[in-house]
Amino acid sequence: MRTGIAVPPPVLVLGGSGFIGRHVVARLVAAGQPVTVLTRRRASARHLILLPTVDVVEGDCMDRDTLMRLCVPAVAVINLVGILHERGTSTFARVHVDLPRLLVDVCKAAGVQRIVHMSAVGADARGGASRYMRSKGEGEDVVAHSGLEWTILRPSIVFGREDRFLNLFARLARSLPLLAIGGADARFQPIYVRDLAACVEHVLNDDATIGQRYSLCGPKAYSLRELVSYAGEVSGHRRPVIGLPPAAAKLQALALELLPGTLMSRDNLASMTRDNVCEGPFPSIFGFAPTALEAVAPTYLAPDAIKSPYDEFREHSGR
Image (cartoon, rainbow, N blue to C red; front, side, top):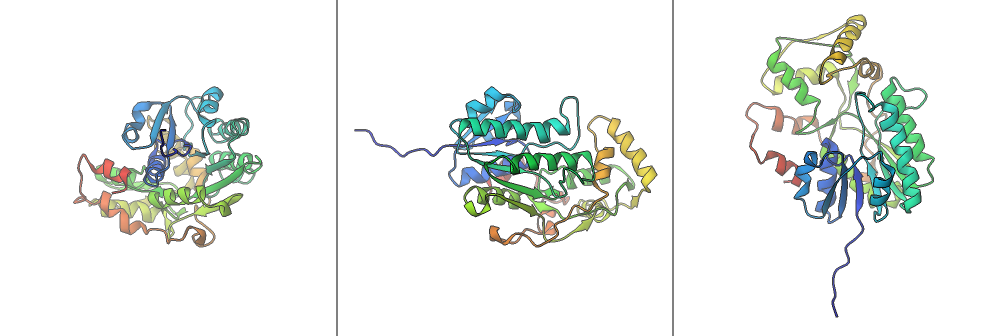
């Protein structure tokens, strides 16, 4: 008679190959949880393929048949898909509203009750400061009224070795004599990507988080001006930071919006008319204090920070 250890059902992660997703997946794998990652391009998830208990599937997250096939064996779904800039058919409405609606419908049809949805601080379907924030709010409403066992996480800006926030400013400081920015006085409360990943893992295993929304921020708030100055200073390229008046900021955002890569858009600028901070302390249910920006940023921004081909692997594996 053959015996064996039963393999638990997988968690399906959408957006698992992205900056936040790769840390979430690594965290779940370290806990022994089988994970299925759906990605549009398998090559973009090559850093996950070698992780044990991870199955990387290439496909379109907006394809109902694909979602159904992957949801049927899943015990839960984590939706990390989001965009900061609209391109072609990848609009805020499609990604932040239509996808959650489709995902909720498929979860119900497949019998998946548990869903964790990543939103953002400031998301508000009716009063959001930008189309991005309003679409995020609409997506939250879809999930919250789904009848599923949901939890919504609402982080501020997320930082970490592969972030596109502090790294961007450090890169600009290396190449420009000064930095002129719109929304210089906008306030952010950055959270460390590993802390965010720990929160995702926690809510999956704590039924007390079902039906709750959690705003997740780091221990300190900063103005955008302070963050830009800090990135330049730590990277060894201290630069003057000039805050643009509203009219000039809109012109700059329009120009950047039209360039390849889209560093900034008018909608991003609109988002910064409201502070991106948490109103209260870090939720005690997670059982830890969030990591300070200053404790991590120098490890990847400083000129003498260790750079090696193995850094990315170590970061993903949690070592």
